[in-house]
Length: 233
Image 1 (cartoon, one colour):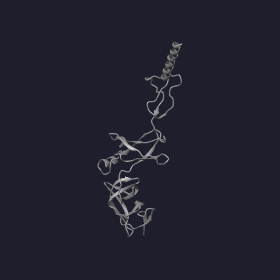
Image 2 (cartoon, helix red, strand yellow):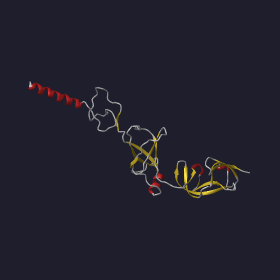
Image 3 (tube, one colour):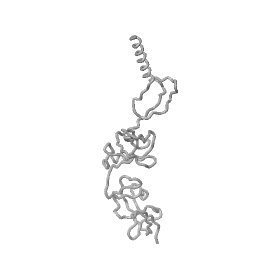
Image 4 (cartoon, one colour):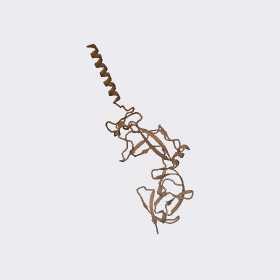
């Protein structure tokens, strides 16, 4: 009787071992993809075709690029280089804001010569697995804070050889061309370092119709210091 019990235990251990051979466990947590091998197919560690793929989702890595000029601005000390201390905001494809903040964990060691950009890699917590690999979005980070900064729309700034200039409307309705010095761009606007004062009226439309010294009829936009102009009498 005892020999029969031992034989059954040995058979049980053999069955459990065979079950382990037939069970494949992923070394990482994540979401599994489609099975690439049909039922009954042979799978070995050296198989050219993987059984499936598993992608980790929490946390998830977001790769984005900054321009060469932005990188140089940070490297020269005009702004702080984004690092793990600066929280990142992720704007998803439907224009909603991802509720959790990310951090920059790594950056490549060279600028891509084809695009003139540097890739940064950020990590976002993704406990609800809202973000999936392959999605697109926009990353927003505050790298500097300026008080009372002057900004003008990008379309108002004219590039004249090595000089930047804008047309302004003086109190007597005459057009004046002013040379300005800009720094970084914020959205569709430039930050103006020199050449303009608070309250100056800048022409944003109709620049081809006006000349310095000409009198114009300003048509103000929603921003009081911006105007679209037409030649006056």
